[in-house]
Length: 213
Image 1: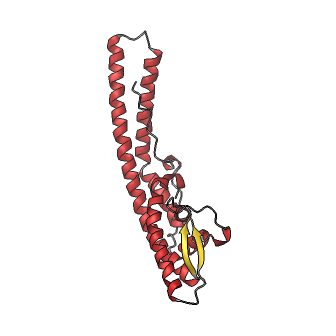
Image 2: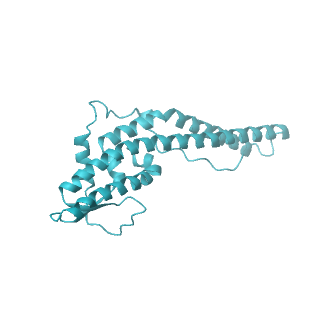
Image 3: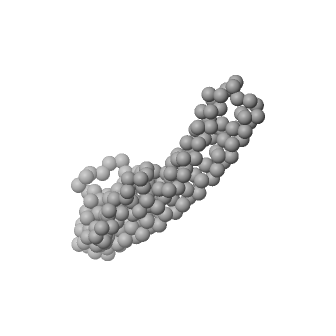
């Protein structure tokens, strides 16, 4: 999954996911004397977006919201065009025409603000569903991995609530978990087909400046 597309929600979801994973990983360490008590680190954000399922989900989300992204971009262009007309027509337009253009611009700006708000809410909800689906299965993969390899705890280096100042790459298990996840939950043949170029939009549009034309 494109990291820019999920960054707004993945951190919060990862925090709740990893709190469960850490509790599971610590249980065998306390009960079994043979456990070495190793500490591991994973970037759950990177793991989710790197899995084959995550990449497919990213393409699907981008395709799903592409038309709304285009609507927002087109509306933003209309507002910019109006601003340009007002700017170039300063002192030349009649008061009536200038007032009409300003009122039209205000209506478009209000519409754009509503569209942006609804768009972002829907994108966040869709992303959260994907992250929850992949994350819960990833917890199971991580749980098995931690038990089989003697980890007492696995920390999430991508969570803001876990301020890791330094971690050796030798204890980073991110790629191992991604590999095991893809083995446990392979995507169907053809499912990873990239989205069409027109649908491959970047992160949700940033609202334009609040200044009115």
